[in-house]
Image (cartoon, rainbow, N blue to C red; front, side, top):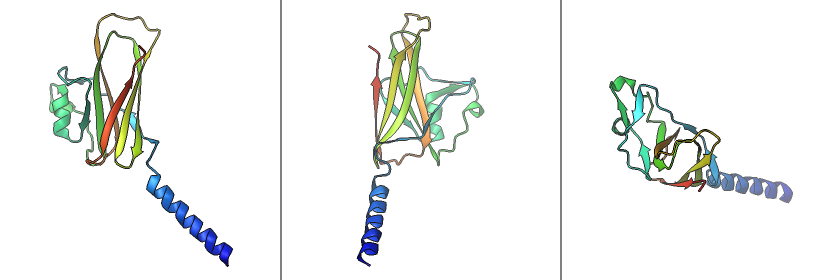
Length: 150
């Protein structure tokens, strides 16, 4: 009897512990967000800043297109887009990104920039790194980190 009660209590405690911490320290599913060919990120996007795009109006402010119907169709009720614009010293970088939950309302958007063997053009170039992810709570704090190869 005591064994069964103890087993039940341990199961309940482990379930509550898991439910309270299930978001911490895990990567959220974020997919690269790439604009269609008929659109491009505007050149005046503030660099070295995390931009949260939570609705169509915010997307329109960040994207240049000749016709509004060319904008990507996004359900902003279920989706958030994160964008960081960064000027780098030349072309030929490989960029990886991920979104990690550090607590229930705290996230880190990690960007890793790697050198490649591609021919380089020694002209500064702006890279726009964007991901789409399931809707993030408006109260959540999101920071970003960029790891550069130099």
